[in-house]
Amino acid sequence: MDREGSWRTIYERCSSTSHRFMRSHFRSGVDFEDVFQDACLVLLKKMDNPSFVLTCSLQTYLNAICRNILVNKYRRQPVHTSISSEFELELAMEVDMDEDENATRFAIFSEVVELMKNRAARCYEIFQLFYFRNIGMQQIADRLGYTTAANVRNQKYKCLVKAKTEIERRLLLNASGG
Image 1: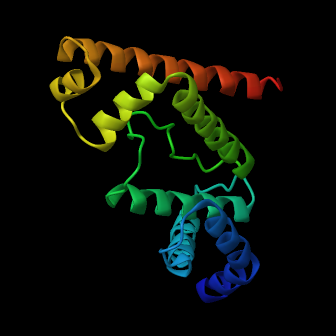
Image 2: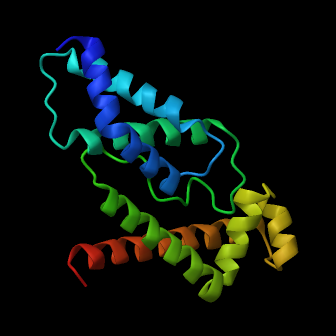
């Protein structure tokens, strides 16, 4: 089959599902059609390589490419979020990670953020001030009643460790079916 025929076949079989995937996982404001076409070009370029082996379904592969393109677009844009990228789960999805696993990881991350809001409010407040509002450690110390900026740094580190540990614990529980 020629390149044009390959393009048409891929588009007809996968475009609607990829568009649905992108709409359900990413905010609007991006031309999903352009993203899908870019993903198809990436796939077609990969297919030119004789050593390329597709280890998942074509649809899963295209969705992963679309996701990576969108994640890269969002990372280049200033995004107003209440959580820093240092605190985020690693969002780069490997091509063979299925959509359910990615959704599970995001759900676990969201649960831990909510847990912090409710049970570790001081940690959440430090993260908000430092990462979201870009307030320096000394100003945070003054604002929250810490004696030194070093105390805030130590507390922030402890909070990051607790959050990471909780995320990892939940991922392990989920992996073991618990």
